Image 1 (tube, rainbow, N blue to C red):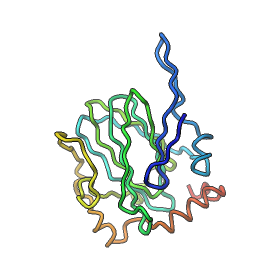
Image 2: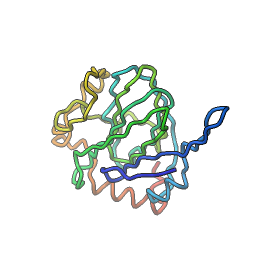
Image 3: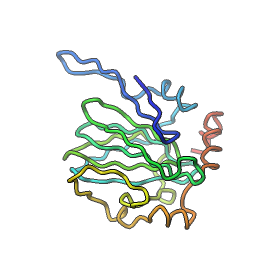
Image 4: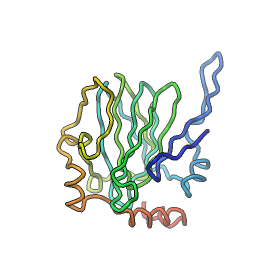
Length: 206
């Protein structure tokens, strides 16, 4: 598989090698050893999630408090989606910047994003199934969101696609409001946590 760094530090695009034959196709969708070589530690998978979305569904921008945070590894099992990674780490050189990857059932790419980064995606087809590997279990008190249509973030959605948001995402604060309220993780805290993970100490906090 090929692993490419995105423009937001701590986020990567993973493109697997596929082996098609007359029966179908085989691929390695996740390699903890290969990913670990790039991010500096093994990703511990504490929870897996599956979402099925209709065309236009926009989920996010979601993030979790650091520590402990929640790293994610996302693939599309069916359909297609645009996956967005947003740097929400206050003080980061790329704060407020985002990058995106097309995830679909043809190329079967994946996206990894580290703790402290924001995540969102928009479904391009009905029945789009996203699969997430998560480094920590869901914690309602530690999970937060930024409004995905905040013009200050400026996620680029496809022309002609009408976004469908949940009530929770519709009520999420803007990036400016989240900064003012102290809701966002800091780059310093995230960097310290990444260092702990690399040393093995951060796993005990999960």
